[in-house]
Image (cartoon, helix red, strand yellow):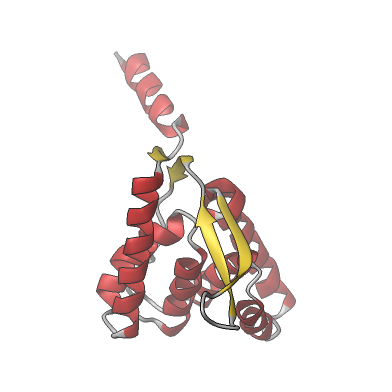
Amino acid sequence: MRRALVGVIALLLAMPALAALYGLTQIDNLYENETSGLKFYEKGEYEQALTLLRETAALGLKRSQYILGFMFLKGEGVERNALLGLAWMGLATESGNEDWQASYDQLYGTLNDTQKAMLQRKIEEYRAKYGAVAQGITCAKTKIVGSRKVDWVCRKSEGSYELHEIEIPAAR
């Protein structure tokens, strides 16, 4: 009995995160959730924004990751945490967005060597779970229709992706 229980526990611990199949309908819903989360964020409704953006960020959407980083940096709807904020911003720079990269680089430049090393480890941990490759995200500069403006657009590909929980430290 004890061996069976130990075996079941070991099996559960060895199981990967929840994987889900994402077709076009699920991906469209994901983009809608991101749009709604961004609107909540812009209105200052941070709890509602966090509810939506934590899922879309976990599934690799770069704009969600960038805003989630700001939420951690500013303590908007979450406990303020510079390490997690910068890690999410750093991960979002996979998109190639030059403005995001410049903001990240400016903040990164304020860190000491120990902090930079901690941040790099956290970004690598996040990249393995939530990064572009892990989550089937491709990004490219795209001209906005009817404008001369160019923006970075990231798209999720159809496929099966693991959904990992995002760590949200408990409030002190």
